[in-house]
Image (cartoon, helix red, strand yellow):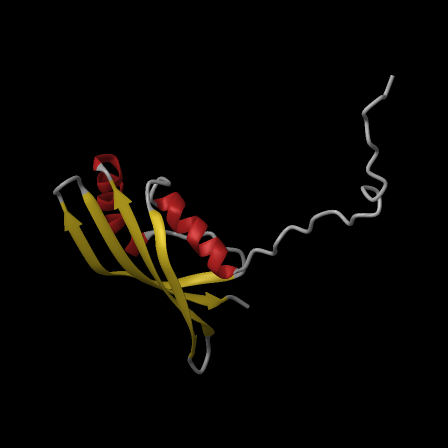
Length: 124
């Protein structure tokens, strides 16, 4: 009945795959993608530690690509909404969110590259 079936004896010994832990950068990228209606693509993301006398956190620089007419329209909304957007990242506060640079091309098809900076503080 089970001819040709090979039982994997090591299968029971294998540990279950671990899910990677999500960090602040992951959560911020997800929030930015949601704000862009998932029509943008993160090209680059860097972060640099930041601290003042009373706060600590990191300044994130994110470059996103919006390719196509619908994506370009989403980029226009993203640019307008980002500075006042209320982020919901657990135990973090967005103190500043700015658009630093926008590259907009129409030929051969609509394309926008947006660079933004977000100051993400640890909320105690």
